[in-house]
Length: 256
Image 1 (cartoon, rainbow, N blue to C red):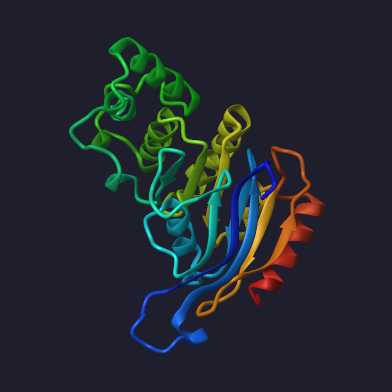
Image 2 (image 1 turned 120 degrees about the vertical axis):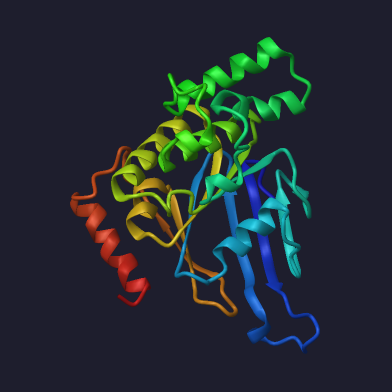
């Protein structure tokens, strides 16, 4: 494994029904091979049900792989770790409803026994970074969907993971809020230099965000069959000629 690889995956496969004879039809994903560099923004793009979330959950350590090799910073992993954090689509499930915005963000540092002054400073830093200044004392029920996702992202960042695993985090947001959050995420990534693995089935979102886009085939027996390099400057223009040319290419991959 090269020293600059944050994630290295070789021949990784997953099947859930282990009682049956091994066939391609038993595998959700099969023979995944991909490497992601430190600080890279990598997109997993594919149709719904193709195994994108399964692969992300294996990398997170929530799901056990069936075969293959999964290395994080050169070390084989098979369980969750503080070097990785997941941002889910449903922020309601990840926020404590009885804690306000600042308390939710401070929760991780508090569990690490970081003193009150330092964890308050950490929370304030990420509150500013995700654009929640002035909303520190609000409870989750008082926040919009976009603001809840900002809290979830700030809470994850407060734990200072090396890798962010994002499972369609903006999928439930309206179009305007989604675009705002996409722009904010790029700014946060540029400032923090985190490695991001972002799952989506939205072609435009993939091109707006990613440096590379890994195309996943349909399940069963799904794999990453092609990787697109996206060499456009940020922020990206959805009406630009190069943007639309790549968009059309990815549409063809979806058979549209």
